[in-house]
Image (cartoon, rainbow, N blue to C red; front, side, top):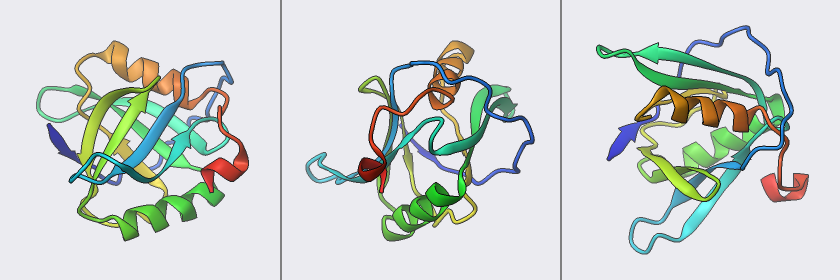
Length: 140
């Protein structure tokens, strides 16, 4: 299923915990062969704020993400370069959702939708509030 990646309004709730969770990665994929083209880890070191909300007609869970200043620029570069491409959001190596980048996202704030359950959204929220598994050089 391909879902759009939408910008959202920034929430004020700070990231609270730095737990050791499986990593969450946002990766742009070459649709012809599945090769990763670019991406970044979403974690305490890259995310300034993360919350769960309910959106849409059916009240489906969504995770709202606000990146820190350095990663906002990096994310804008990625989404500008790869507008129209499919991305994968993975948790512990498992693909959760495959949104299509519909437009450059320069605000550093976006919403992840397409979760089947609130528990799945909560696992992503916990992971993005957790410690990064990659080094700074890996995320630039």
